[in-house]
Length: 385
Image (cartoon, rainbow, N blue to C red; front, side):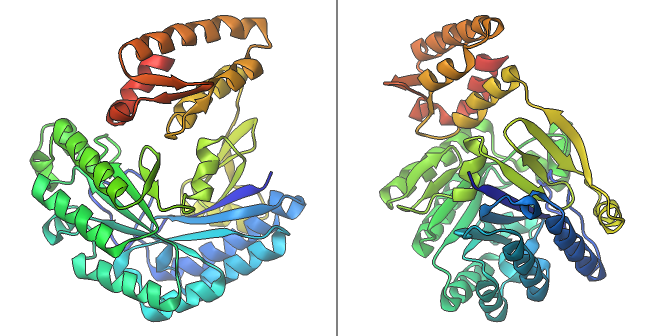
Protein backbone atom coordinates (compact mmCIF):
# COMPACT_ATOMS: atom_id res chain seq x y z
CA UNK A 1 0.00 0.00 0.00
CA UNK A 2 1.37 3.41 -0.94
CA UNK A 3 2.01 6.04 1.70
CA UNK A 4 0.48 9.45 1.80
CA UNK A 5 3.12 12.09 2.55
CA UNK A 6 2.12 15.16 4.55
CA UNK A 7 4.52 18.12 4.72
CA UNK A 8 3.86 20.72 7.39
CA UNK A 9 4.81 24.36 6.76
CA UNK A 10 3.90 26.15 10.01
CA UNK A 11 4.37 29.74 8.81
CA UNK A 12 1.70 32.42 8.24
CA UNK A 13 1.52 36.11 7.33
CA UNK A 14 -0.84 36.70 10.24
CA UNK A 15 -2.67 34.54 12.75
CA UNK A 16 -6.42 34.15 12.26
CA UNK A 17 -8.51 34.67 15.38
CA UNK A 18 -10.05 31.18 15.09
CA UNK A 19 -6.77 29.31 14.43
CA UNK A 20 -5.96 26.48 16.84
CA UNK A 21 -2.95 25.11 14.92
CA UNK A 22 0.74 25.28 15.90
CA UNK A 23 1.66 28.02 13.43
CA UNK A 24 3.38 31.38 13.69
CA UNK A 25 4.44 34.54 11.91
CA UNK A 26 8.21 34.54 11.25
CA UNK A 27 10.69 36.40 9.08
CA UNK A 28 11.31 35.07 5.58
CA UNK A 29 14.95 34.23 6.31
CA UNK A 30 13.73 31.19 8.26
CA UNK A 31 12.03 29.64 5.24
CA UNK A 32 15.13 28.29 3.47
CA UNK A 33 16.65 26.49 6.50
CA UNK A 34 13.26 24.96 7.18
CA UNK A 35 12.91 23.71 3.60
CA UNK A 36 16.44 22.30 3.80
CA UNK A 37 15.51 20.40 6.96
CA UNK A 38 12.44 18.96 5.22
CA UNK A 39 14.70 17.67 2.44
CA UNK A 40 17.08 16.08 4.95
CA UNK A 41 14.19 14.44 6.78
CA UNK A 42 12.92 13.00 3.48
CA UNK A 43 16.37 11.56 2.74
CA UNK A 44 16.47 9.76 6.10
CA UNK A 45 12.79 8.78 6.27
CA UNK A 46 10.92 5.59 5.44
CA UNK A 47 10.83 6.78 1.83
CA UNK A 48 14.59 6.35 1.64
CA UNK A 49 14.17 2.84 3.03
CA UNK A 50 12.12 1.63 0.08
CA UNK A 51 8.60 2.83 0.89
CA UNK A 52 6.61 4.41 -1.90
CA UNK A 53 4.09 7.23 -1.98
CA UNK A 54 1.27 8.24 -4.29
CA UNK A 55 -0.17 11.37 -2.62
CA UNK A 56 1.55 14.43 -1.18
CA UNK A 57 -0.10 17.22 0.78
CA UNK A 58 1.65 20.47 1.74
CA UNK A 59 -0.35 21.93 4.64
CA UNK A 60 0.12 24.53 7.30
CA UNK A 61 0.19 27.29 8.02
CA UNK A 62 0.51 28.79 4.58
CA UNK A 63 2.85 26.71 2.40
CA UNK A 64 2.30 29.08 -0.53
CA UNK A 65 4.44 31.65 1.32
CA UNK A 66 7.56 29.63 0.49
CA UNK A 67 9.44 30.65 -2.61
CA UNK A 68 8.45 28.36 -5.51
CA UNK A 69 12.09 27.33 -5.86
CA UNK A 70 12.04 25.95 -2.29
CA UNK A 71 8.84 24.04 -2.98
CA UNK A 72 10.38 22.66 -6.19
CA UNK A 73 13.47 21.59 -4.24
CA UNK A 74 11.31 19.63 -1.77
CA UNK A 75 9.37 18.04 -4.63
CA UNK A 76 12.60 17.02 -6.39
CA UNK A 77 13.83 15.40 -3.17
CA UNK A 78 10.54 13.53 -2.82
CA UNK A 79 10.70 12.22 -6.38
CA UNK A 80 14.22 10.92 -5.83
CA UNK A 81 13.10 9.16 -2.64
CA UNK A 82 10.10 7.28 -4.02
CA UNK A 83 9.56 5.14 -7.07
CA UNK A 84 5.77 5.48 -7.05
CA UNK A 85 3.89 7.80 -9.34
CA UNK A 86 2.65 10.83 -7.43
CA UNK A 87 -0.96 10.99 -8.58
CA UNK A 88 -2.21 13.79 -6.30
CA UNK A 89 0.06 16.58 -5.05
CA UNK A 90 -1.74 19.30 -3.08
CA UNK A 91 -0.55 22.73 -1.98
CA UNK A 92 -2.55 24.77 0.51
CA UNK A 93 -2.58 28.42 -0.54
CA UNK A 94 -4.11 31.65 0.70
CA UNK A 95 -5.70 33.71 -2.09
CA UNK A 96 -3.56 36.82 -1.58
CA UNK A 97 -0.33 34.79 -1.97
CA UNK A 98 -1.19 33.59 -5.48
CA UNK A 99 0.11 35.23 -8.66
CA UNK A 100 0.24 34.04 -12.28
CA UNK A 101 3.98 33.51 -11.93
CA UNK A 102 3.66 31.44 -8.76
CA UNK A 103 0.83 29.35 -10.20
CA UNK A 104 2.92 28.49 -13.28
CA UNK A 105 5.94 27.62 -11.10
CA UNK A 106 3.84 25.36 -8.84
CA UNK A 107 2.50 23.42 -11.80
CA UNK A 108 6.02 23.05 -13.22
CA UNK A 109 7.24 21.76 -9.83
CA UNK A 110 4.71 18.93 -9.90
CA UNK A 111 1.74 20.25 -7.94
CA UNK A 112 -1.58 19.31 -9.55
CA UNK A 113 -4.08 20.33 -6.85
CA UNK A 114 -4.48 23.60 -4.94
CA UNK A 115 -6.44 23.89 -1.69
CA UNK A 116 -7.60 27.50 -1.51
CA UNK A 117 -8.51 28.97 1.88
CA UNK A 118 -11.36 31.26 0.86
CA UNK A 119 -13.29 30.93 4.19
CA UNK A 120 -15.86 33.60 3.18
CA UNK A 121 -16.78 35.87 0.27
CA UNK A 122 -17.61 38.81 2.54
CA UNK A 123 -14.87 41.27 3.35
CA UNK A 124 -16.28 42.19 6.77
CA UNK A 125 -16.26 38.56 7.91
CA UNK A 126 -12.74 38.05 6.56
CA UNK A 127 -11.42 41.19 8.25
CA UNK A 128 -12.99 40.30 11.59
CA UNK A 129 -11.45 36.81 11.43
CA UNK A 130 -7.98 38.26 10.83
CA UNK A 131 -7.69 37.02 7.24
CA UNK A 132 -5.34 38.93 4.93
CA UNK A 133 -7.30 38.42 1.70
CA UNK A 134 -10.56 39.89 0.45
CA UNK A 135 -13.29 38.63 -1.87
CA UNK A 136 -11.65 39.93 -5.04
CA UNK A 137 -8.42 38.11 -4.15
CA UNK A 138 -10.30 34.80 -4.35
CA UNK A 139 -11.53 35.56 -7.86
CA UNK A 140 -8.06 36.67 -8.98
CA UNK A 141 -6.47 33.57 -7.45
CA UNK A 142 -8.82 31.19 -9.26
CA UNK A 143 -8.27 33.04 -12.53
CA UNK A 144 -4.47 32.73 -12.15
CA UNK A 145 -4.68 29.02 -11.25
CA UNK A 146 -6.96 28.19 -14.17
CA UNK A 147 -4.80 30.17 -16.60
CA UNK A 148 -1.72 28.27 -15.41
CA UNK A 149 -3.43 24.95 -16.09
CA UNK A 150 -4.73 23.75 -12.71
CA UNK A 151 -7.76 21.52 -13.16
CA UNK A 152 -8.15 20.43 -9.55
CA UNK A 153 -8.93 23.23 -7.08
CA UNK A 154 -10.39 22.79 -3.62
CA UNK A 155 -11.99 25.69 -1.74
CA UNK A 156 -12.84 26.06 1.96
CA UNK A 157 -15.65 27.94 3.67
CA UNK A 158 -16.18 28.32 7.44
CA UNK A 159 -19.71 28.29 8.84
CA UNK A 160 -20.03 30.35 12.01
CA UNK A 161 -17.63 33.27 11.56
CA UNK A 162 -18.47 36.34 13.67
CA UNK A 163 -21.18 38.53 12.08
CA UNK A 164 -22.09 35.81 9.60
CA UNK A 165 -25.80 35.76 8.74
CA UNK A 166 -28.01 33.41 6.78
CA UNK A 167 -27.98 35.91 3.93
CA UNK A 168 -24.20 36.35 3.88
CA UNK A 169 -23.66 32.59 4.14
CA UNK A 170 -25.97 31.82 1.23
CA UNK A 171 -24.17 34.48 -0.78
CA UNK A 172 -20.76 32.92 -0.02
CA UNK A 173 -21.96 29.45 -1.01
CA UNK A 174 -23.49 30.81 -4.22
CA UNK A 175 -20.26 32.58 -5.20
CA UNK A 176 -18.22 29.47 -4.48
CA UNK A 177 -20.51 27.35 -6.66
CA UNK A 178 -20.25 29.95 -9.42
CA UNK A 179 -16.46 29.44 -9.46
CA UNK A 180 -17.04 25.65 -9.64
CA UNK A 181 -13.98 24.30 -7.83
CA UNK A 182 -13.56 20.56 -8.19
CA UNK A 183 -13.64 20.07 -4.43
CA UNK A 184 -15.24 21.90 -1.49
CA UNK A 185 -14.67 21.76 2.27
CA UNK A 186 -17.23 23.24 4.68
CA UNK A 187 -15.99 23.56 8.25
CA UNK A 188 -18.09 24.57 11.23
CA UNK A 189 -16.29 27.05 13.47
CA UNK A 190 -14.59 25.32 16.40
CA UNK A 191 -15.00 26.98 19.78
CA UNK A 192 -12.13 25.77 21.94
CA UNK A 193 -9.46 27.17 24.23
CA UNK A 194 -6.70 26.65 21.67
CA UNK A 195 -7.69 29.74 19.66
CA UNK A 196 -7.95 33.39 20.69
CA UNK A 197 -11.54 33.59 19.48
CA UNK A 198 -12.46 30.33 21.18
CA UNK A 199 -10.99 31.34 24.54
CA UNK A 200 -12.80 34.66 24.38
CA UNK A 201 -16.12 33.03 23.53
CA UNK A 202 -15.78 30.42 26.29
CA UNK A 203 -15.02 33.14 28.86
CA UNK A 204 -17.98 35.25 27.75
CA UNK A 205 -15.78 38.08 26.48
CA UNK A 206 -16.25 40.39 23.52
CA UNK A 207 -12.77 40.67 22.00
CA UNK A 208 -12.35 39.39 18.42
CA UNK A 209 -16.14 39.90 18.02
CA UNK A 210 -16.77 36.76 20.04
CA UNK A 211 -20.26 37.96 20.94
CA UNK A 212 -21.16 37.99 17.22
CA UNK A 213 -20.55 34.27 16.66
CA UNK A 214 -23.75 32.62 15.32
CA UNK A 215 -25.30 30.08 17.67
CA UNK A 216 -25.13 26.32 17.16
CA UNK A 217 -28.54 26.13 15.50
CA UNK A 218 -27.54 28.81 12.99
CA UNK A 219 -24.27 27.00 12.18
CA UNK A 220 -26.15 23.74 11.64
CA UNK A 221 -28.59 25.59 9.38
CA UNK A 222 -25.69 27.06 7.37
CA UNK A 223 -24.17 23.59 6.97
CA UNK A 224 -27.47 22.06 5.84
CA UNK A 225 -27.98 24.84 3.28
CA UNK A 226 -24.48 24.30 1.87
CA UNK A 227 -25.04 20.54 1.64
CA UNK A 228 -28.28 21.02 -0.29
CA UNK A 229 -26.83 23.67 -2.60
CA UNK A 230 -23.73 21.60 -3.38
CA UNK A 231 -25.81 18.52 -4.09
CA UNK A 232 -27.84 20.53 -6.60
CA UNK A 233 -24.60 21.67 -8.24
CA UNK A 234 -23.47 18.07 -8.75
CA UNK A 235 -21.08 17.61 -5.83
CA UNK A 236 -20.84 14.27 -4.05
CA UNK A 237 -20.91 14.57 -0.26
CA UNK A 238 -18.38 11.89 0.70
CA UNK A 239 -17.13 12.99 4.15
CA UNK A 240 -18.72 15.10 6.87
CA UNK A 241 -16.86 18.26 5.83
CA UNK A 242 -16.02 17.44 2.21
CA UNK A 243 -17.68 17.39 -1.21
CA UNK A 244 -16.20 16.59 -4.61
CA UNK A 245 -17.24 16.56 -8.23
CA UNK A 246 -17.14 13.04 -9.74
CA UNK A 247 -13.62 11.61 -9.45
CA UNK A 248 -12.37 14.54 -7.37
CA UNK A 249 -12.46 13.23 -3.81
CA UNK A 250 -9.28 14.04 -1.88
CA UNK A 251 -7.23 10.86 -2.28
CA UNK A 252 -4.75 11.97 0.36
CA UNK A 253 -7.30 12.77 3.06
CA UNK A 254 -9.14 9.52 2.41
CA UNK A 255 -6.05 7.76 3.76
CA UNK A 256 -6.65 9.35 7.18
CA UNK A 257 -10.28 8.27 7.40
CA UNK A 258 -9.49 4.77 6.13
CA UNK A 259 -6.55 4.34 8.55
CA UNK A 260 -4.05 3.85 5.75
CA UNK A 261 -0.34 4.64 6.36
CA UNK A 262 0.93 8.18 6.01
CA UNK A 263 4.23 9.88 6.76
CA UNK A 264 4.36 13.37 8.24
CA UNK A 265 7.40 15.58 7.63
CA UNK A 266 8.16 18.94 9.21
CA UNK A 267 7.54 20.56 12.58
CA UNK A 268 4.43 19.19 14.27
CA UNK A 269 3.64 16.70 11.51
CA UNK A 270 1.95 13.42 12.49
CA UNK A 271 2.52 9.91 11.08
CA UNK A 272 0.82 6.51 11.19
CA UNK A 273 2.12 3.12 10.05
CA UNK A 274 -0.83 0.91 10.99
CA UNK A 275 0.36 0.03 14.49
CA UNK A 276 2.03 3.22 15.77
CA UNK A 277 1.37 6.95 15.72
CA UNK A 278 3.99 9.63 16.29
CA UNK A 279 4.58 13.33 15.83
CA UNK A 280 7.53 15.61 15.25
CA UNK A 281 8.42 18.39 17.67
CA UNK A 282 6.21 21.44 17.15
CA UNK A 283 8.73 24.29 17.43
CA UNK A 284 10.19 24.96 13.94
CA UNK A 285 13.63 26.14 15.11
CA UNK A 286 14.05 23.08 17.33
CA UNK A 287 12.92 20.86 14.47
CA UNK A 288 15.54 22.39 12.14
CA UNK A 289 18.29 22.04 14.77
CA UNK A 290 17.48 18.37 15.43
CA UNK A 291 17.42 17.50 11.72
CA UNK A 292 20.62 19.43 10.95
CA UNK A 293 22.41 17.53 13.72
CA UNK A 294 21.48 14.29 12.00
CA UNK A 295 19.03 13.27 14.69
CA UNK A 296 15.34 12.50 14.74
CA UNK A 297 12.69 15.14 15.35
CA UNK A 298 10.14 12.56 16.48
CA UNK A 299 8.32 12.64 19.79
CA UNK A 300 5.04 11.32 21.20
CA UNK A 301 5.52 7.81 19.81
CA UNK A 302 2.55 5.65 20.81
CA UNK A 303 1.52 2.09 19.99
CA UNK A 304 -2.03 1.69 18.72
CA UNK A 305 -3.42 -1.27 20.63
CA UNK A 306 -6.57 -3.12 19.49
CA UNK A 307 -9.03 -1.19 21.72
CA UNK A 308 -7.67 2.13 20.39
CA UNK A 309 -7.67 0.85 16.82
CA UNK A 310 -11.28 -0.24 17.23
CA UNK A 311 -12.28 3.23 18.42
CA UNK A 312 -10.42 4.76 15.47
CA UNK A 313 -12.34 2.52 13.06
CA UNK A 314 -15.49 4.26 14.25
CA UNK A 315 -14.60 7.91 14.83
CA UNK A 316 -12.50 8.10 11.65
CA UNK A 317 -14.43 5.72 9.41
CA UNK A 318 -17.87 7.08 10.28
CA UNK A 319 -16.82 10.51 9.02
CA UNK A 320 -17.27 9.04 5.54
CA UNK A 321 -20.81 9.22 4.19
CA UNK A 322 -20.51 5.63 2.94
CA UNK A 323 -19.87 4.57 6.53
CA UNK A 324 -17.90 1.52 7.64
CA UNK A 325 -18.09 -2.21 7.03
CA UNK A 326 -19.18 -3.30 10.50
CA UNK A 327 -19.12 -7.00 9.62
CA UNK A 328 -15.45 -6.68 8.59
CA UNK A 329 -14.67 -4.91 11.87
CA UNK A 330 -16.37 -7.64 13.89
CA UNK A 331 -14.36 -10.33 12.08
CA UNK A 332 -11.06 -8.56 12.63
CA UNK A 333 -11.51 -7.48 16.24
CA UNK A 334 -13.49 -10.36 17.76
CA UNK A 335 -10.54 -12.76 17.57
CA UNK A 336 -9.46 -12.11 21.16
CA UNK A 337 -11.80 -12.99 24.07
CA UNK A 338 -11.07 -9.72 25.87
CA UNK A 339 -12.41 -7.77 22.87
CA UNK A 340 -15.71 -9.65 22.83
CA UNK A 341 -17.30 -7.60 25.62
CA UNK A 342 -16.20 -4.34 23.99
CA UNK A 343 -17.86 -5.30 20.71
CA UNK A 344 -21.01 -6.41 22.54
CA UNK A 345 -21.24 -2.98 24.20
CA UNK A 346 -20.77 -1.28 20.84
CA UNK A 347 -23.56 -3.36 19.31
CA UNK A 348 -25.93 -2.30 22.10
CA UNK A 349 -25.06 1.38 21.65
CA UNK A 350 -25.43 1.11 17.87
CA UNK A 351 -28.87 -0.44 18.31
CA UNK A 352 -29.89 2.44 20.58
CA UNK A 353 -28.53 5.08 18.19
CA UNK A 354 -30.37 3.40 15.31
CA UNK A 355 -33.58 3.36 17.32
CA UNK A 356 -33.14 7.07 18.06
CA UNK A 357 -32.60 7.83 14.37
CA UNK A 358 -28.92 8.80 14.61
CA UNK A 359 -27.43 5.85 12.72
CA UNK A 360 -28.55 3.54 9.95
CA UNK A 361 -27.50 0.18 8.51
CA UNK A 362 -27.40 -0.85 4.85
CA UNK A 363 -26.33 -4.47 4.56
CA UNK A 364 -22.91 -4.77 6.24
CA UNK A 365 -22.38 -1.00 6.26
CA UNK A 366 -23.02 1.25 9.24
CA UNK A 367 -23.23 5.02 8.85
CA UNK A 368 -24.45 8.17 10.51
CA UNK A 369 -27.96 9.08 9.38
CA UNK A 370 -27.67 11.84 6.72
CA UNK A 371 -29.75 14.32 8.71
CA UNK A 372 -27.58 13.90 11.80
CA UNK A 373 -24.15 14.86 10.46
CA UNK A 374 -24.10 18.19 12.33
CA UNK A 375 -24.19 16.32 15.65
CA UNK A 376 -21.58 13.71 14.70
CA UNK A 377 -19.32 14.61 17.64
CA UNK A 378 -22.14 13.92 20.08
CA UNK A 379 -22.80 10.60 18.33
CA UNK A 380 -19.14 9.60 18.66
CA UNK A 381 -19.18 10.44 22.38
CA UNK A 382 -22.32 8.38 22.96
CA UNK A 383 -20.92 5.49 20.93
CA UNK A 384 -17.35 5.36 22.26
CA UNK A 385 -17.28 6.86 25.76
